[in-house]
Image (cartoon, rainbow, N blue to C red):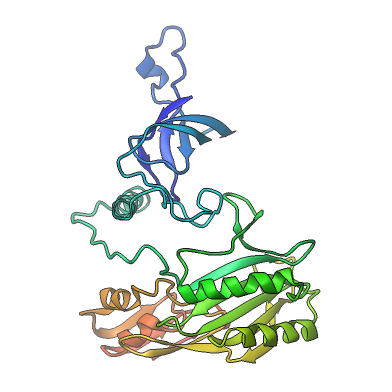
Length: 341
C-alpha cells in the first residue's frame, strides 16, 4: 500500500490517509467523504512516500508499519543509536536534529490550536540542547531470570529490549549501565530487582542509583549487592532500594525503603542554587538546559504570590522566592519537596 505522509503528530507518528471509500450510488466523491481514514505510521517524515502494511484497524483510524521508503525526505538520516526503531524511548533519531526542533515546535503549535483553541500570534522560540548524552536520569527495566537482561520496553509494548548503552544518557550513566551488565551476567543481581534508575549530578561526576524491587526481594541479598555495586564504581555516591508494598495497585505505588548504602541524595548545583535531590525525587532531565529553563520561567517575574504546581525539588520555586513575597510549591511525591515560602 502506497502512502504519502502529510505531517508528524504528537508522539512521533506520521499522519497519512488511506484511500477513500468509493462513493455510493447517487453521491459524488465529495459527498461521500473523499478523505480516507487517518493512518498513523512511525519513523517517517512529512512529504515522504512509503510502502506500508497495516498493523491495526480501528473504527476511526488505522496504524501501519513502513515496508520501504519510496521517496525519502532530505531531512532523513541514518540513526546513530543501534536500538532505534525497536526501543520505545525515542521517536526522532532518523531525522536531522535541527529538523526535529522544527517538528516539535509545529506539533506544540497545533496541539495548542486543537486542544486549547489557542492560535499563537508569535513564533515559538526554540532552546536547543546537544542531541546526545544530555539525560541526567535513565530508568532501566531489569529481568534477573531465567537470563539477566536490562533495558527499555520495546515500541508499544511491555516486552523488554536488552540495552547495553544509551546514547542520549550521560557518559557516567552509561558507565553505570556498563557495570550493571557483567554484574547481572555473573548472577549477582538479586532476585526481585525489577528496575534500576541512574541519576547523575550537574557535572556528571556522581551517580545516585535507585533500585525498584518486588515483594520477593530479600533485604540481605539486596544490601550485599548494593555494597558491591557501589564499590565497583567510585562515582556512585549511594544506592537506595525500595520495595513495593502493594504490587497489584499501579495507582498507589506505595513503597518502603529496603536498603540504603552511601548517600540517599545528590547535590545538584545550578547557577542559582544547590539542590538536594533524594532518591525518587523529580528533577529536570536535560542537564544542559536546567539553568536556561529557570531563566525562561522566572526572569522578570515578581509579585505577591507564585504557584509552582509541579515543584519536584523546588528548582523554579527557589528562583521565584527571590522576587515573590510568597511561593506555594505543590508536589504529590512523598519523596520530593512539599513546599517553599
